[in-house]
Image (cartoon, rainbow, N blue to C red):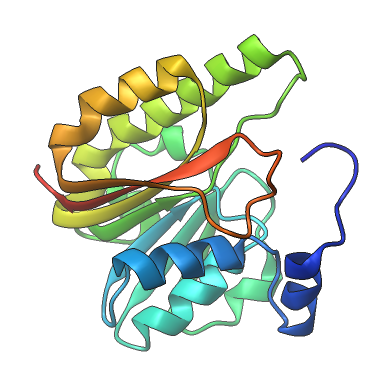
Length: 198
């Protein structure tokens, strides 16, 4: 994130539309393009804080759906008021069993907009980012049901590209997208997996 916030079009739009962060528009674009979320789905948002992805997801999945947010940061009260939302202050990688999240079975979709804390040292940050991506992929067999959908933020590097190529076969469809609301200098893009082959 750096120490400065660019008060750009998307930042202002988010403020005006009462969303908690500009990253809402990344998920919205991904979902409009790839139809990741549907009414009635059960969704987990990894590293949800501050919660704009939860706000969007909650709306799309509707009353029959449910979204669970997990983050090591203190629970954001701004999303706890939504009926179909539950948030937990936990480390994702400490979760041994989904019952710790109050659910019986794996989710229809796994969302991750997480980024590691950065050092400013490019090679180190790329490694940290890839480690995080690998760790999240490692959760899928437990967290994502067969046929489920997956969205994850990736910091681009050659090793990330190589790793992702090797994961393609886990899904029927595997897409890369750099959303329009991503700052042009950013090295991030999103990987969208559809129809998980467990």
